[in-house]
Image (cartoon, rainbow, N blue to C red; front, top):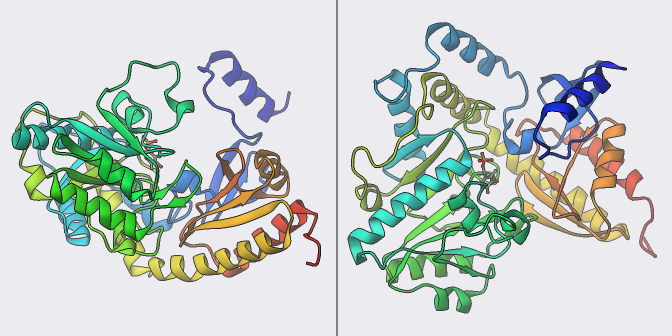
Length: 401
Ligand SMILES: *Cc1c(COP(=O)(O)O)cnc(C)c1O
């Protein structure tokens, strides 16, 4: 058996069977590249599902982790440390929101945000103000609360009963939204850009109407920016790209450069609904994760990565659009910045596997969507490589192209 086969066999024997992995074992990374056990190099358009925004083994991240790990990794939330407040203040400054709670993952941050919205709702409208409105086709995570907000059967099936009191409306259908929101609505929860759902954007008008409906009925407008936030759209928060400010924004994936950290940020009016003891976590907001997150934000700023996201994102989008025009198997490009989807007319997974064999990591979602969430460090020459391989794999051109 090769070392790779040994790894696969070990997992096959002892792991809960929940993942359908691609046939590669990764050993190390550098910038936008990953290397497998045999030292084979892969150009990374996935970035650990949008987590490795500053690439792999960024020298400043490595140094920060080394330094902090030698000092203090964890203290629990019984005590103060230097970095949680500093990170919260930084995030408040960047978002214009006022208070932060740190969790270990995106799902947990979603969970906390709906707990907060329920408290705020009950304070305004009593027990009846508990309803949640979410979007069909959305994805918010795997715990019962987050799963209950997820508008896709494949994630919900078999786990019922879920949270009651969740109403789903189709994305960008303003009338359905207004019909669903009333005085008993505690929160409207949405991803400004659907991630798992296949890279679909909410229209600015739909977001404005969501803002108006939340205001009219004193509900919390919650944006799940776990995938699209923290720089991926070219602004530090996705809502800044759309011009609509939520009451609560949920972030996670890239925040601590691969260490587990999530957070929700809330306006004071909602944040003040919670009291000491009503929410908490053992691990969330530890000194190592928070210090690394501060470093992440500093790198994005100092290396001017948002400008790179906008420029290289536009370049990638243009390349993909050309593919959608010329190749029969490709249909449409969606998204912005470095959160892009190529809608195919054929299953995406075989393409992803063929790309892997050629040294490129792509990702698929919703069976027929190729999803691109590359590191913010991506350069035009990397895009050229990706597009060239994609063209080869897609093969047949449209007639006349
Ligand atoms: C990944 C993701 C989540 C869940 O986050 P985890 O860290 O996997 O718990 C929730 N919402 C969106 C939009 C995501 O992309």
